[in-house]
Image 1 (spheres, helix red, strand yellow):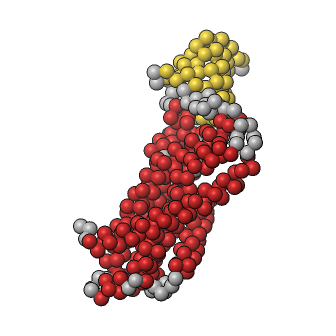
Image 2 (tube, rainbow, N blue to C red):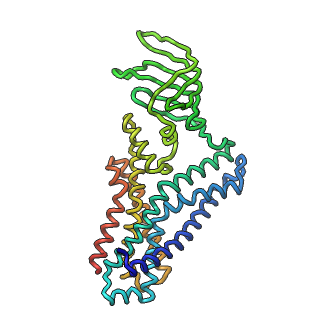
Image 3 (cartoon, helix red, strand yellow):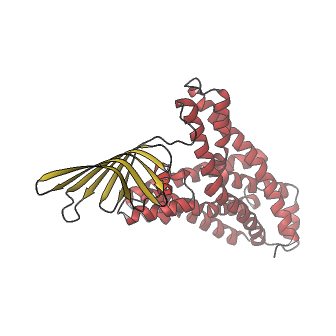
Length: 356
């Protein structure tokens, strides 16, 4: 049950976290605007289009910065209470540091849940819309079209889709069927276009070449139905970057890749990173508690901000290095995605218990 004291501490943390979020997201947005301004003038891409692109990127920037934002919010929120001697009064009344850490974790649970929603829904949606907006005005692409090639595999069939117009309309498709015994080429099917109708891909203007007995047999077909398991959803997910896919999409895509013997390490790593994000926020906030009560108790706002930024940047770098090292070294995805968080959370809990 949340007591009045817990709510009081949480409100201070939430308030300063919101201020830190506004400040850091504004700086990040401004940097993005300046770095992308070189594309102004390409096609119909102007200042207003760039502004729209940058605004759609705000959820992604919040997702990236939220662990640092939560750390700064905790440092500033508890630091304000410490500067006003309210923490001293709490301790004198018998409130332990562990109790204050518990209230901080409750606030972290709420912010972590927000981070999960942000990373699973708002950030992928914003990133996808930002990309479509930029491509629409820079290259004149019609909204809703994808228009890019992609390779797919299902069992012994390897597909090359030359042009993906939309998720349900593709063109210039070539399917290479391999023999299961020696993986030799059994047939090649080329279709000028195909549509996904009633759960099946219906190809039109098909040319099929079968290889057998040292020869080739060619057949021209007006239509052909392919009842594979590659749905428009899988087609869309394959073309997205891993950090622009939701948790559900990542699970669906890794299932497809595993079923067809394809490399899914990048997507499994991203899946675990999204799942670990709330725990990372909570670990960062818990890590700040002993410092506010100890070495940073009498420090000013500037020192707390500097400490928070340094810890946040160091953690971000460690997280990226661990993820890349884990992929190269073949570590389990949960270890690659969560090792810095586990270490930080362990250190934070040890310091908190020792300081009480």
